[in-house]
Image (tube, rainbow, N blue to C red; front, side, top):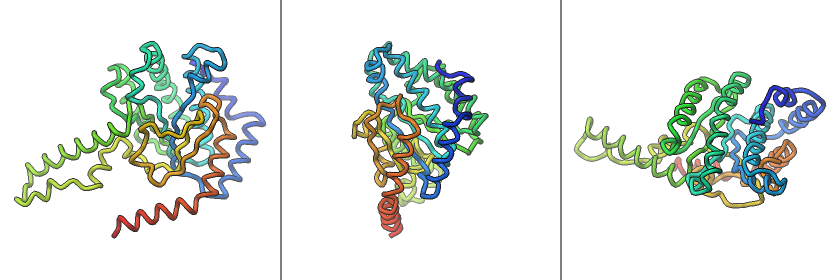
Length: 278
């Protein structure tokens, strides 16, 4: 793994740390997004361009995520969601899939350490039954151990697609309504009616508010079945930089762009809330 104590120390010391914190102080004069989500695209392209082994690109991507968590914590962003592995990615080369799963296991141990420094809560969103038993057990243990933390909430979407998330929410809602109707049937079927709130509470992403920004690196504009349900009033930002090279300047630019368009998106969200309230 690329992570060690020297890397952690580098994040908190030196003139770059001082400049970063000064820049963040200026940014906090304006509205700060509560929740950012990232489609981490470009790990393989990064490795190919650098003439490195394909797996090294994923290692570099894990490092970029570590830096991002520190930046978001310092900036005051409460929720961070990352698209780590799609259900469709299981169709990739088995060696690459295994490399990503091994890296995920290493990341669980790393995030356990970070959770103690930042009071970080870690949540895994997706069809975890598709993961290996060892990885699933480690992920559930990390979620349990960090459940009381609240300074920063990291959601890792693994074995995830929004289509599967919606299907899961509908199935769980139907199951719940059937159980309630069986216990407390009023003869009119009112307990069987599924409402929007029933669907949303069973979504994998129920732990976090809808994202304010979705960032996709690598120059693509596709959402790739990521947070489709949650992104109706979301600022979409496409960065041409590949994910392992995403840094603090890119984050600053994205937040500045969000602040510039904040009034527009706030108005859209308020209109939807008013529509929902009748």
